[in-house]
Image 1: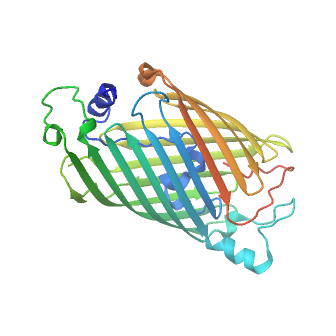
Image 2: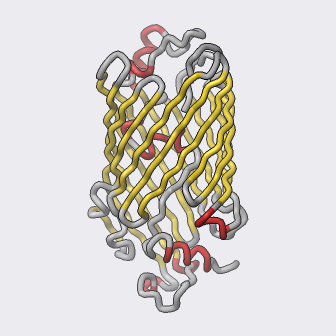
Image 3: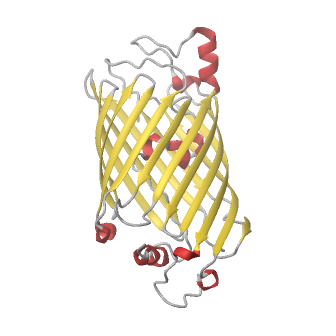
Length: 330
């Protein structure tokens, strides 16, 4: 088995020798609640999952598996009352007015060289109607993460590195409880939100101390806009900005063309890291998507592409309109 010199060099230089790394997902617009708990249930009661194989072909490269469940109580109330979710072509069910309380559970597993991280998020989201067209959503999530270091896979970029010397041939483990909170302003065709992640800054940790002081307060800004260009074609634009004191800032955006609220094609860019192409299809309650990502700028020396597969399933049947000036996906 090849030793992962490049992985350790990345951990030591890019990640500040702390094993903290920022989780990237090219389809970030479809997994909004992971970044901001206020968006829990924003698109309805759903099961979501994605698999991301970063830098395909590079040994011990990052691999991420994510799965979540979101339950919007307004969906259940409307469905039990008169079946509004099973709409006609006019799509009379208005999510903007109905999404009052929602709950979510999300699990993420990420493997990168000698590091393994598992995250668990329990989230709640609610909304207050500000006007006929605007709502303000608020949310919070209790989070737990477990990070493990398998030092048998550790090859030092610098011999005697004190950051990891104590774990040579052994393993380390850290568990952390924390809190995320967020606010989002929403309307039928746009959203704008801000979230704070790791608010407790790792103060509630157990286990080894090799990740001490490695959990800064994270700031997340999300925005999206969608509009119909014709009765069959729509345009969707999404953006994501993240900042913390250790990894500093990351910005990314994507543009998608949507046909009959069923097919989409798009492109994205993560500043100094990657370009991406994506596509997908919605078949009744099921959405399938694929992203192909190519490294650029600071990440170009890796010369390995990234593949990302995603699946979303509506728990309650919704008949989305194929025609008319309304886009129903982000």
